[in-house]
Image (tube, rainbow, N blue to C red; front, side):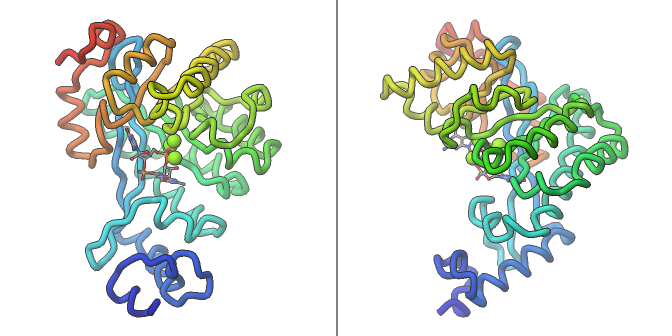
Length: 291
Ligand code: C2E
Ligand code: MG
Ligand code: MG
Ligand code: MG
């Protein structure tokens, strides 16, 4: 059954979760091979700075197009290689590509930085920091234009190591973002010694915020506490004007979500950025995004 599933290209429960499944092993090998032959690509999703209404940066999101034409999302294939050296190779590819692409749009006059997701396993990779520095120099991108994101739950596994890696990245001038905050059951006070620059509130809170008073209170207090600690706050998963309005009211700094834009391939991103609508605080207050 597994072999048949692999041939037909469908991702079955077996293929992804049974470690002994031949289909799973074949997928892992295919993914390894994809790193060097352009079957991996990046889509980019804009993040809006509410103080200016402009795109402050875009988040790189990995896509895998398999030879049979099927396309997989990161949550469908990254778990296959999560704790192996393959994830280190993938992160290097993503970093290099994102830094090169960012330099390209900045050369074209678009002043947006880029943000890259790292896997918890990358925290154990001592070459990561030096290789990031090398990629920035190679492509001529200012360190302040790069942010790396790592999930709250990924950090909790080894806070001491995360602190060292974050400090190294901060010393380089790279931004550090804690992703999916609120899902790892840690307190923000627990993380206050981590040298991060911004926090991304998980989209489950953003989604429920209008319907659920508890979620609204959580979002509001995360924003306030984050500001007390001198860090910026990003809300992900913003899908409606109503949610945007509420986030503006609460003093959120940066928003990202389908309401602003879906993740876009690079050429669509360039076109979108050239005629990007403004999502300013004022426009949000007036209940619309002005063109
Ligand atoms: P994430 O970093 O939290 O990225 C946000 C995810 O939410 C993306 O899913 C994005 O497409 C989706 N999203 C954005 N706005 C909305 C919205 O308004 N509504 C809804 N429902 N969804 C929205 P995607 O691209 O499938 O990525 C899933 C996760 O995979 C990411 O979550 C990130 O943790 C991981 N990932 C993505 N790219 C990479 C990568 O290059 N390396 C590593 N290690 N992980 C990656
Ligand atoms: Mg992210
Ligand atoms: Mg996230
Ligand atoms: Mg996520």
